[in-house]
Length: 48
View 1 (tube, rainbow, N blue to C red):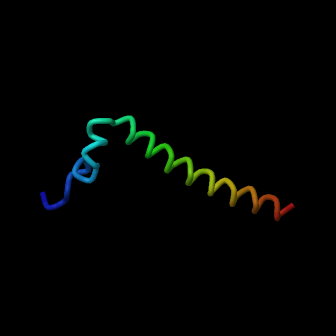
View 2: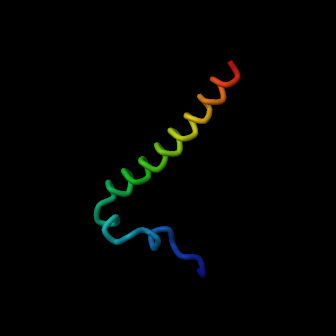
């Protein structure tokens, strides 16, 4: 019970607008994939 519930970490406005939360998550995942993909492409390019 000492751990905060995941919903407690979400700002109140996102509880009323869950779409904004999904957009925020999708943007974060997209940035990670783009940065990771760029590094992989650079390594492949350097190997050739």
